[in-house]
Image 1 (cartoon, rainbow, N blue to C red):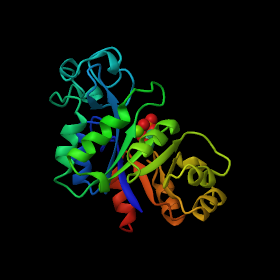
Image 2: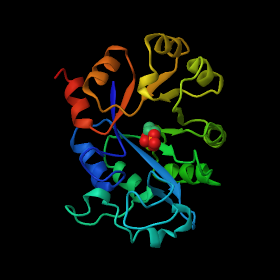
Image 3: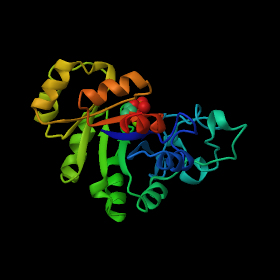
Image 4: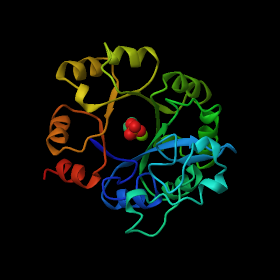
Amino acid sequence: MLNFAHRGFSGKYPENTMLAFQKALESGADGIELDVQLTRDNRLVIIHDERVDRTTDGTGFVRDFTLSDIQQLNAAGTYADTLPPVSIPTFREYCHWVKQTDLLTNIELKNGVYDYPGIEAEVWQVLQEFQLQDQVIISSFNHASILRMKQLAPQLTYGLLTESWLINPGKYTRDLGVACYHPLYGSLTDDTVAEIKRQGIRINTFTVNDEEAVRKLLQQGIDCVITNYPDMVRRIIQGG
Ligand code: G3P
Ligand code: MG
């Protein structure tokens, strides 16, 4: 079972920052999950919410900032009193860093609420620049966007995110020609897992921060857990 750090090692460090990504690497994660959005000047930045308010000292929508303005913000969030300031990383900055590691990356297109025009082409452009095609999974709650990107870059691996319980998720995923299903782990009954596996689909599930849940998912043969605590998941995978 693979161990992906959700927004980096976000259980202990400011989410979606280079610090959280570096700490995930040091904690034994196999991969990083991160969220990408576009600024007003069409630059890819790594941030979860559509607004900057929760995780930075700024206010407003990501899409209304230029890259240079959004990079002035402190993204330390709740750690702002204890850590030096950190900026919102660009996707290019991340790619430059990850290229020097063996980490995999789950790039979540954060376009489930606001459907950023052209985000798929931007991500594809950067992945080609850094030759990261074989080390990434592209996922989104916006399944139309996944199909758009699949047309642009059919050779990449894709995952369908869901926050709800689907009927026959394996069949749904296979019918869309996608390799991975990314559900909330609470929806993974033994019957559901069996149906998905019958269709030959990989299961990468989120956000698993509970030790007992990790043990159960390991037993169920789940392919990957996405966690805020990659250190804990590493220990369990190693039999601890
Ligand atoms: O990709 C898994 C997970 O990150 C999806 O939900 O809201 O944490 O981005 P969210
Ligand atoms: Mg995410």
